[in-house]
Image (cartoon, rainbow, N blue to C red; front, side):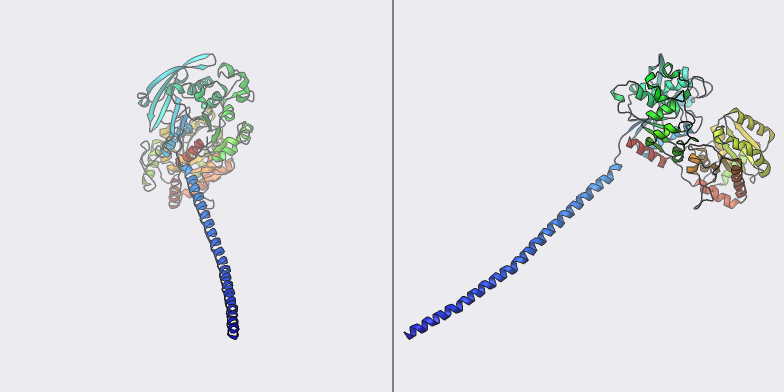
Length: 553
């Protein structure tokens, strides 16, 4: 019994010792499981965080790819068809700066963006040179409705420097010996032209996205488009009006509204103003976009001083107004290649500019002397160009400074008579050619030292730009495009000419005296010539702004 008891006791003891071990093992296992569980949770959490991070990176990458695509959108060429409408264009017919712009801007737009199909249309004047006319191709003819009239309209086309030109033929309106403008029936002539532009579109099989019209002579196009009935092919057409000078508005008696223009009386509010038919006003109201030829001028025409009576109308339509500075055709105006001037030169070879001055002095009957400053102008002669200022000061400047004075242009009889008087009173010191001449103008640009533009108002002005291109230092009044293109030499950071703010004789004379005094220092004057020749006034930047405007429409 005793053995059994001992054995039983031993067994019980063994059982007791096994139980704590088992419990200990379970406890250890539980502890390990508890320890593993947080680790697993941490790993799971880490995996989730990695997944979230990867998802965020994918989203960021996708956003970046979308942004890259969005950034590339402006580079996509949007094909546009544009019909450019004007009453004159170089080299076919020209009376001033309008022709320079209309002859060069379409070409530069096409060069900058070949995907734009831009074409130009002008009247077929009888004075268009035969060297061009002989190659014009007859397309066809129609009869244009102008109120109760049915007028013949022939259509010719001609390709020139990459641009297709259309010419509107009607000898009753455009076969005139006295030039392009200034006839009693100008209202009827250019009403016919504007109406023809729209009615020949089926004939030339060209329905553009945009019709871009210039000045009052073409400004009836947007008004006709909005006030007449046209078929569905005309529905997409938008219009742009460029105002080159708001002072020329196409104002006529109200009686021509229905009898000549053929516009219903119910639309009289669109095109009449101040008890007259005002063609430019009608276009300001009906065009989809309005452009002026400089940013400053876009602001100035909102004021009574520069708005020509239309400032309130302009302000009402300011939401569609912008200013784009004109450029210059650097191929047409290039002293290095110009065949009209006496000798070719550029900024690196200025010795031939001195030769141009010498030959200009000889041709104009002036004293040949390189030390005498030649002051010149090439301009239409009217009060807006500052000719009253010139008239009141030029004799004093000739007498006191000993300058030579040259010029070319036509305009108001008052000023032409004055320059005839100057020619007779100051032989050997003054030579002003009366009548528009591009050839004489280019010779003046090549041979003059100083160029004057004391304009009361100047939408853009090309003359100061041409003068700079040919190395003639400009003197300008700070208005319109003159302010946008010429900075005074005394400005902080330097300038490219002489400027004055007030339209006064004293301020103008002071600027001329400054220039003549600086001219005496030949080394410094040469630096000024190089400075003005070095400014880029080409069409490149301007063309991009027009293209952007086309795309926005």
